[in-house]
Image 1 (cartoon, rainbow, N blue to C red):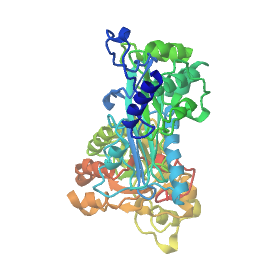
Image 2: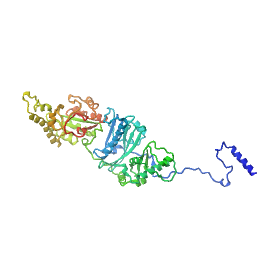
Image 3: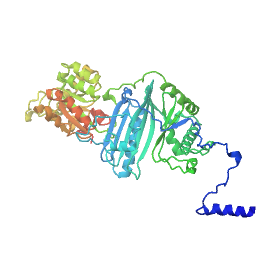
Length: 549
């Protein structure tokens, strides 16, 4: 009977199932289960990992980088758009920063098979907007690539941007973003530059960590991402850090004022633990914040001292100030142009000097010796402000004719039948130059290192007598003809090329009145306005130069 009843029950159950896949349900509930309440099961919450993922980090206003020089290089041929900060004085900070720029240039040259050379852009380029842009290293890649101020200069190219993350005591911490869209997929990476402003040196971010730092960071990232993927293993990650990935991660560390550390996890990050959960490599970079407690276990002595300085309430100590004309500027990298002024000094010279000071620019003043004593204060200020006081002869005579003996020391024609001796001609040229140099030394304390022959007239004899290089020009404003206003500006701003030497005169109202417009226009095209020594990479010992090209 029992066997028959069981058979009937089984047939009823099976008849109601649409195949063998249906789950088996007991026909009755044991009486002892009747009073048990049903409980909904939830996955346990992940344990604390000492890190949080994608936590917002707020950069500082770039103006907090007091004393740093906002800079920018744009090159359309290679699609380069690089924004960065420099220190006025040469040092590790500038070397490290410009090496990053050069690395982008190298990537672009390799991808495009083109060679880099400095470029100036058109007059509407807006390149007087320079330096860091707040939040630029945190914006989604798509946003950056749509922003002309931050994106590569072409649809495919390379770019560099920066954020100021901390500024206290002698330390400035920057987050620098490097983007390359020239390959199949964009490469988007971040590095941290920590600058000691007292010495213009840098501390690589990887030096923040002790020997256990790489393992601690790797484990924190892996465990945090594993918990995000709902992996419930309580066993600490066991995989060894990938050398390239961990180096990039440690190099991106940003020390925070609350004692925490902010890291960038690069695109492509993957570990065996994450792979076992079916987690794909990161499609885009993400960020991780280590708590102060975990960060403290991973910091080296250097890292601890840096963290202490950043957490101090001291204001940032600005780097040493250096006059614009004394700065070391690589004009094979930057688009440089040299403004030069002849025939002064004069009562107009200070107006030009004021504008140069306000723009952080440098220029070269070729002085007529007979005017120096009358305007000794203006001549002195040229040197005090860091510009070049150079030689333009005593009487503004044609030195080539003086050397040939076809004019005399007064500029009058010489009787061809009564030409002076070679020695007398040499003395006449030498007197024009040496007398001027002595006047400049008396007024400024500095001897000229170059001269400009009046009218641009010189020959080998003049160069030999001068024992200085002759500086000519390739952009002539002809301000002496009365060219003024917009016409004068237009003779310079759209015409200048990288390496150009521009001729003006600081004795004409028009050149003093338009100096602000000229500087604004040149900076807008991306130029660095420098003196001829900077343009030529140091003043040559001899020869004649109309540009650096």
